[in-house]
Image 1 (cartoon, rainbow, N blue to C red):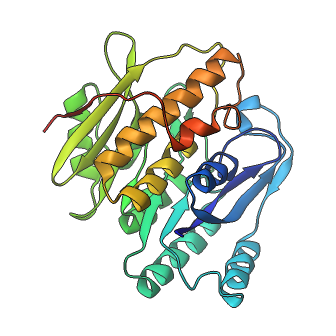
Image 2 (image 1 turned 90 degrees about the vertical axis):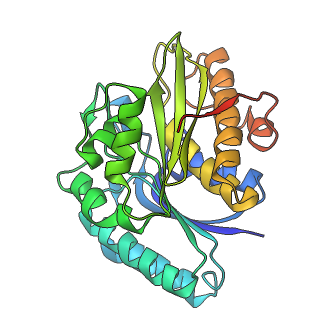
Length: 283
């Protein structure tokens, strides 16, 4: 059984961060050790929430505790997402370095949660720069949205090929893959684009117009991409399966008129999506 350590936020209500990542990975048959960087009542998209950011020492203790009971003897993947502050980022950075040295085949997926179009930067000062300058260089797969891609690459995106060129600017090493989420397309579609040094592929899906868009789609996407890659050993196949599953979750969420992802209701679609979208190579 594959084992993933997922280090990101936790909410008591709703599905973002680890709440959007752990269950889908488990449904794929992957064991998950969840390390929660924040403990909030709900996601910040509601505008009000309660809870706190975990301290650097707290996260270090959790990771040390996992090691002491042998839980880190076998680690196939690491997933990181929302960070409360730079101090937590430094802990994650060192943990990834240590585990990559210990497990040479380990695959690290970094979801650089920084901001979004319309909202701008919504993390604490310095977090975006820490992703850019420190953390993403360690990643095997980065999963930014278009806003985050522009922030990290310094390249303004206004077309599909701009996205590809921005990925070229961002890529830190030849083996690194970048999957850009929420890429605008024409005719009422939205796309995911996977870019590697060997080529670029994208998958388009119909755009669903929510009254209030659900949060957590990026967290779900990153988790499924990591999980599918560990199982399929193909980034292109992971892209195709992930796109189908995320779209089916969105369809269930849209039908329920909910602002929270309907992961439980659509859980079978996480494992065996009943729809397939065409994947196209663009370079």
